[in-house]
Length: 275
Image 1 (cartoon, helix red, strand yellow):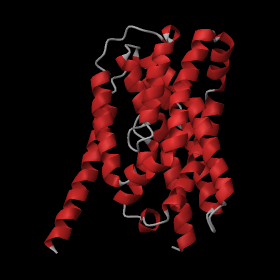
Image 2 (tube, rainbow, N blue to C red):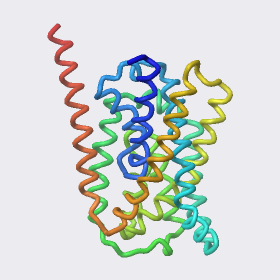
Image 3 (cartoon, helix red, strand yellow):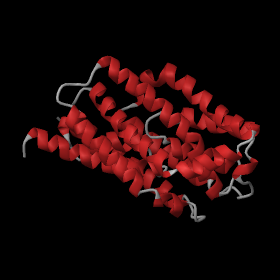
Image 4 (cartoon, helix red, strand yellow):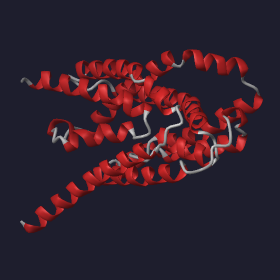
């Protein structure tokens, strides 16, 4: 298999994974970094970090476009029925991650984007999600207040840490605020769209300024297309989550994946020490 064909196939695989990983609270960005590392895709893991981040931008662009299409009716309905309090919730949930992301996104990626820190984010985030899901289901999304918007904004800012998961963080915050599982998921989706769209636009602008890396157009296009299609195909996951199902299986998966990564890192360190 030629290098270009291999790059296209792996771009397609990562794009196909990105859709469900974004819809589930398991950290899509964490998976984009960890899966190639676990599978020993040296061409990906040893490539320029800026190239990997640019590729992730393409995947997020595909996912954002698919989410806008899939949730168009729900978003339009919410916009028609929105009152001042609902606007405050969305605005407050956006401001905190937007400011912190603009200032600290690059330093966070440089210092916390390694396999070990991503694994810790998965494990800690999974444990908090399981704990939060024990909260009583008493509130509905129509009851969200400005205080809830602030909590959701802080949660989305925490998700700048690789492995934490934006969806997982906002679900954790909403469940701790005693929203039902279905309403917590709905709130998570609604506050996510402005952040995903804004972050994608900012990153595309940065990519335009720096220029497309040589030879990257094909894999980027394949990855974005696969992400778009997989996101649309995975929207049924939303329906499954909203059927009042426990979030414990997702939390267990996060903890298991993070543990596998930490175990491999420990084995690698032990092997290096014995040499």
